[in-house]
Image (cartoon, rainbow, N blue to C red):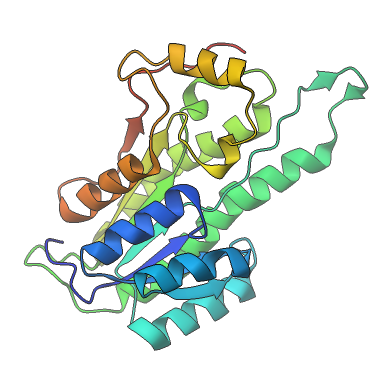
Length: 255
Protein backbone atom coordinates (compact mmCIF):
# COMPACT_ATOMS: atom_id res chain seq x y z
CA UNK A 1 0.00 0.00 0.00
CA UNK A 2 2.27 2.73 -1.32
CA UNK A 3 0.05 5.79 -1.51
CA UNK A 4 -1.88 6.73 1.62
CA UNK A 5 -3.45 9.97 0.46
CA UNK A 6 -7.11 9.89 1.54
CA UNK A 7 -6.82 6.28 2.75
CA UNK A 8 -8.93 5.78 5.89
CA UNK A 9 -7.13 4.54 9.00
CA UNK A 10 -8.22 3.68 12.54
CA UNK A 11 -5.87 3.83 15.53
CA UNK A 12 -7.08 2.50 18.87
CA UNK A 13 -5.53 3.92 22.01
CA UNK A 14 -4.97 7.04 19.93
CA UNK A 15 -5.16 9.47 22.83
CA UNK A 16 -1.51 9.22 23.85
CA UNK A 17 1.80 7.40 23.53
CA UNK A 18 2.37 5.00 20.65
CA UNK A 19 -1.20 5.32 19.39
CA UNK A 20 -1.00 9.10 19.13
CA UNK A 21 2.41 8.88 17.42
CA UNK A 22 1.11 6.34 14.90
CA UNK A 23 -1.91 8.53 14.18
CA UNK A 24 0.33 11.55 13.55
CA UNK A 25 2.62 9.58 11.24
CA UNK A 26 -0.26 8.18 9.19
CA UNK A 27 -1.86 11.63 8.92
CA UNK A 28 1.44 13.12 7.73
CA UNK A 29 1.51 10.42 5.03
CA UNK A 30 -1.90 11.61 3.84
CA UNK A 31 -4.25 9.16 5.56
CA UNK A 32 -7.58 10.18 7.07
CA UNK A 33 -7.28 9.00 10.66
CA UNK A 34 -9.95 8.12 13.21
CA UNK A 35 -8.53 7.95 16.74
CA UNK A 36 -10.39 5.67 19.14
CA UNK A 37 -9.84 5.83 22.88
CA UNK A 38 -11.88 4.98 25.96
CA UNK A 39 -10.94 8.44 27.24
CA UNK A 40 -12.78 10.64 24.79
CA UNK A 41 -11.33 13.86 26.18
CA UNK A 42 -7.72 12.65 25.86
CA UNK A 43 -8.08 11.84 22.19
CA UNK A 44 -9.69 15.12 21.13
CA UNK A 45 -6.54 17.24 21.24
CA UNK A 46 -4.51 14.81 19.14
CA UNK A 47 -7.35 14.44 16.64
CA UNK A 48 -7.66 18.21 16.35
CA UNK A 49 -3.90 18.56 15.88
CA UNK A 50 -3.80 16.15 12.92
CA UNK A 51 -7.21 16.92 11.44
CA UNK A 52 -8.51 13.52 12.47
CA UNK A 53 -11.69 12.18 14.03
CA UNK A 54 -11.88 11.59 17.78
CA UNK A 55 -14.11 8.70 18.83
CA UNK A 56 -14.84 7.51 22.36
CA UNK A 57 -14.67 3.72 22.25
CA UNK A 58 -14.31 0.73 24.56
CA UNK A 59 -12.52 -1.77 22.33
CA UNK A 60 -13.70 -4.75 24.38
CA UNK A 61 -17.38 -3.84 23.95
CA UNK A 62 -19.04 -5.05 20.75
CA UNK A 63 -21.62 -2.27 20.48
CA UNK A 64 -19.07 0.42 21.28
CA UNK A 65 -16.80 -0.78 18.46
CA UNK A 66 -19.72 -1.09 16.06
CA UNK A 67 -20.74 2.51 16.82
CA UNK A 68 -17.15 3.77 16.52
CA UNK A 69 -16.74 1.95 13.22
CA UNK A 70 -19.96 3.44 11.84
CA UNK A 71 -18.89 6.96 12.86
CA UNK A 72 -15.44 6.49 11.32
CA UNK A 73 -16.87 5.08 8.10
CA UNK A 74 -19.32 7.96 7.80
CA UNK A 75 -16.53 10.52 8.22
CA UNK A 76 -13.73 8.91 6.21
CA UNK A 77 -15.07 5.88 4.35
CA UNK A 78 -14.14 2.26 5.04
CA UNK A 79 -10.84 1.84 6.88
CA UNK A 80 -7.96 0.16 5.06
CA UNK A 81 -5.55 0.45 8.00
CA UNK A 82 -6.14 -0.62 11.60
CA UNK A 83 -3.51 -0.06 14.29
CA UNK A 84 -4.45 -1.59 17.64
CA UNK A 85 -2.61 0.23 20.45
CA UNK A 86 -5.28 0.16 23.17
CA UNK A 87 -4.14 -1.85 26.18
CA UNK A 88 -3.48 -1.91 29.91
CA UNK A 89 -0.78 -3.21 32.26
CA UNK A 90 -1.63 -4.38 35.80
CA UNK A 91 1.22 -5.91 37.79
CA UNK A 92 0.57 -8.72 40.29
CA UNK A 93 2.62 -11.63 41.56
CA UNK A 94 0.71 -14.92 41.60
CA UNK A 95 1.28 -15.09 45.35
CA UNK A 96 2.06 -11.84 47.11
CA UNK A 97 2.38 -10.68 50.69
CA UNK A 98 -1.38 -10.89 51.12
CA UNK A 99 -1.77 -14.28 49.49
CA UNK A 100 -3.06 -15.30 46.08
CA UNK A 101 -3.46 -12.60 43.47
CA UNK A 102 -6.99 -11.42 42.79
CA UNK A 103 -8.58 -13.01 39.74
CA UNK A 104 -10.08 -9.70 38.63
CA UNK A 105 -6.76 -8.22 37.47
CA UNK A 106 -6.10 -11.22 35.24
CA UNK A 107 -9.59 -11.13 33.78
CA UNK A 108 -9.45 -7.37 33.17
CA UNK A 109 -6.02 -7.52 31.50
CA UNK A 110 -7.04 -10.26 29.08
CA UNK A 111 -10.43 -8.64 28.53
CA UNK A 112 -8.92 -5.36 27.33
CA UNK A 113 -5.71 -6.57 25.68
CA UNK A 114 -6.86 -9.80 24.04
CA UNK A 115 -10.62 -9.56 23.64
CA UNK A 116 -10.33 -5.87 22.75
CA UNK A 117 -7.76 -6.53 20.05
CA UNK A 118 -9.73 -9.44 18.58
CA UNK A 119 -13.04 -7.58 18.76
CA UNK A 120 -11.70 -4.58 16.88
CA UNK A 121 -9.80 -6.72 14.39
CA UNK A 122 -12.80 -8.90 13.46
CA UNK A 123 -15.23 -6.01 12.95
CA UNK A 124 -12.86 -3.76 11.02
CA UNK A 125 -11.64 -6.69 8.91
CA UNK A 126 -15.20 -7.56 7.95
CA UNK A 127 -15.62 -4.00 6.68
CA UNK A 128 -12.28 -4.08 4.82
CA UNK A 129 -13.16 -7.37 3.14
CA UNK A 130 -16.13 -5.79 1.37
CA UNK A 131 -14.03 -3.09 -0.31
CA UNK A 132 -12.33 -3.08 -3.70
CA UNK A 133 -8.60 -4.00 -3.76
CA UNK A 134 -6.11 -1.15 -3.59
CA UNK A 135 -3.19 -2.87 -5.33
CA UNK A 136 -2.48 -5.23 -8.21
CA UNK A 137 -1.86 -7.96 -5.63
CA UNK A 138 -5.43 -7.57 -4.40
CA UNK A 139 -4.57 -5.95 -1.08
CA UNK A 140 -7.58 -4.49 0.67
CA UNK A 141 -6.06 -3.51 3.98
CA UNK A 142 -3.60 -4.12 6.80
CA UNK A 143 -4.01 -4.71 10.53
CA UNK A 144 -1.16 -4.03 12.97
CA UNK A 145 -1.56 -5.23 16.55
CA UNK A 146 0.61 -4.25 19.51
CA UNK A 147 2.23 -7.04 21.48
CA UNK A 148 5.24 -6.60 23.80
CA UNK A 149 8.61 -8.21 24.44
CA UNK A 150 6.97 -9.30 27.71
CA UNK A 151 5.26 -11.92 25.54
CA UNK A 152 8.65 -13.64 25.31
CA UNK A 153 10.46 -12.66 28.53
CA UNK A 154 7.84 -11.64 31.04
CA UNK A 155 9.15 -10.34 34.34
CA UNK A 156 8.00 -11.05 37.87
CA UNK A 157 4.50 -9.70 38.36
CA UNK A 158 3.73 -9.78 34.64
CA UNK A 159 1.91 -13.09 34.32
CA UNK A 160 -1.37 -11.49 33.24
CA UNK A 161 0.28 -8.92 30.97
CA UNK A 162 2.62 -11.46 29.40
CA UNK A 163 -0.27 -13.87 28.83
CA UNK A 164 -2.25 -11.13 27.08
CA UNK A 165 0.63 -10.06 24.85
CA UNK A 166 1.59 -13.66 24.18
CA UNK A 167 -1.94 -14.18 22.91
CA UNK A 168 -1.53 -11.31 20.47
CA UNK A 169 1.72 -12.86 19.21
CA UNK A 170 -0.04 -16.22 18.81
CA UNK A 171 -2.95 -14.62 16.92
CA UNK A 172 -0.75 -13.06 14.27
CA UNK A 173 -0.08 -15.93 11.87
CA UNK A 174 -3.51 -17.60 12.04
CA UNK A 175 -5.19 -14.22 11.64
CA UNK A 176 -3.05 -13.52 8.57
CA UNK A 177 -4.01 -16.93 7.20
CA UNK A 178 -7.69 -16.36 7.93
CA UNK A 179 -7.71 -13.01 6.15
CA UNK A 180 -5.41 -13.85 3.23
CA UNK A 181 -8.33 -14.67 0.94
CA UNK A 182 -9.71 -11.21 1.71
CA UNK A 183 -6.46 -9.46 0.78
CA UNK A 184 -5.88 -8.28 4.36
CA UNK A 185 -2.44 -8.51 5.97
CA UNK A 186 -1.93 -8.93 9.73
CA UNK A 187 1.26 -7.98 11.56
CA UNK A 188 2.26 -7.35 15.16
CA UNK A 189 4.89 -5.14 16.77
CA UNK A 190 6.44 -6.18 20.09
CA UNK A 191 7.90 -3.03 21.65
CA UNK A 192 10.33 -2.94 24.53
CA UNK A 193 10.34 -0.02 26.96
CA UNK A 194 8.88 2.99 25.14
CA UNK A 195 8.62 6.54 26.51
CA UNK A 196 4.86 6.63 26.97
CA UNK A 197 2.63 8.04 29.73
CA UNK A 198 2.66 4.54 31.24
CA UNK A 199 6.39 5.04 31.97
CA UNK A 200 6.14 8.53 33.46
CA UNK A 201 5.75 7.30 37.03
CA UNK A 202 8.77 4.98 36.90
CA UNK A 203 11.45 5.77 39.50
CA UNK A 204 14.82 7.03 38.21
CA UNK A 205 16.69 3.95 39.45
CA UNK A 206 14.28 1.63 37.63
CA UNK A 207 14.54 3.76 34.49
CA UNK A 208 18.34 3.52 34.62
CA UNK A 209 18.15 -0.25 35.04
CA UNK A 210 15.86 -0.51 32.01
CA UNK A 211 18.19 1.59 29.88
CA UNK A 212 21.27 -0.39 30.97
CA UNK A 213 19.54 -3.52 29.68
CA UNK A 214 19.30 -2.09 26.14
CA UNK A 215 22.43 -2.93 24.09
CA UNK A 216 22.06 -0.10 21.58
CA UNK A 217 20.99 2.59 21.66
CA UNK A 218 21.07 2.45 25.49
CA UNK A 219 17.81 4.28 26.11
CA UNK A 220 14.07 3.79 26.01
CA UNK A 221 12.40 3.78 22.64
CA UNK A 222 10.47 6.75 21.31
CA UNK A 223 6.81 6.60 20.27
CA UNK A 224 7.90 8.05 16.94
CA UNK A 225 10.08 4.98 16.33
CA UNK A 226 7.05 2.77 16.83
CA UNK A 227 5.13 5.00 14.41
CA UNK A 228 7.86 4.74 11.76
CA UNK A 229 7.62 0.95 11.93
CA UNK A 230 3.84 1.14 11.59
CA UNK A 231 4.23 3.23 8.44
CA UNK A 232 6.81 0.86 7.00
CA UNK A 233 4.57 -2.16 7.60
CA UNK A 234 1.68 -0.37 5.91
CA UNK A 235 3.81 0.48 2.89
CA UNK A 236 5.63 -2.87 2.56
CA UNK A 237 3.04 -5.31 1.27
CA UNK A 238 5.27 -8.37 1.63
CA UNK A 239 5.24 -8.10 5.42
CA UNK A 240 2.55 -10.45 6.68
CA UNK A 241 1.93 -12.90 9.51
CA UNK A 242 4.98 -11.91 11.57
CA UNK A 243 5.89 -10.19 14.82
CA UNK A 244 8.65 -7.55 14.80
CA UNK A 245 10.51 -6.72 18.00
CA UNK A 246 11.25 -3.03 18.56
CA UNK A 247 13.56 -3.04 21.55
CA UNK A 248 17.16 -2.00 20.75
CA UNK A 249 18.21 -5.62 21.27
CA UNK A 250 16.98 -5.73 24.86
CA UNK A 251 15.98 -8.91 26.65
CA UNK A 252 13.99 -8.53 29.86
CA UNK A 253 15.59 -9.70 33.09
CA UNK A 254 13.58 -11.66 35.62
CA UNK A 255 12.78 -8.55 37.66
